[in-house]
Image (cartoon, rainbow, N blue to C red; front, side, top):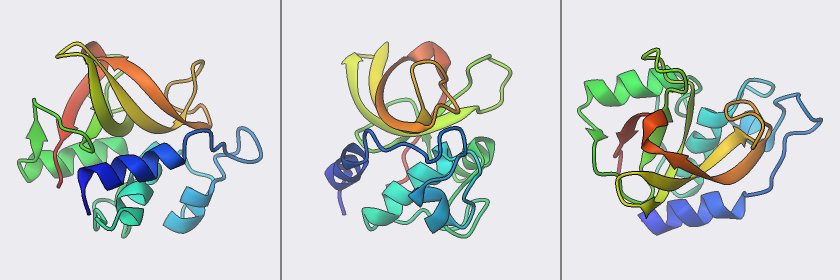
Length: 151
């Protein structure tokens, strides 16, 4: 298992969409045992498991379904970082209400300390948190609640 393996697994999923549209039904949810639920965290859990680094029980047996649950878990374990590396987990807070709204996998900086690319499930250009597709997104630091280095 390596950081590159996590990125390779995530990258291979780009373009995968839920079916039917707006159903939250995916192979990730099926694997997780929560098909039909919002699936950004489920996607991250699936990627880590397929890369042979399962996250273990966070708020569900195969990882995490709730972004806030992931944040609280990694904060408690002192795994949050200000210097993310490829393959680390990113947690977003879109409206700055101190609650995690979305999650993905950090890929690389596009502008060091300002903008970065992240692999994310259940996103789209029109709907950041429930868009129905796996994408490589460009994000800015203003929307980040935390990075978690779990490797």
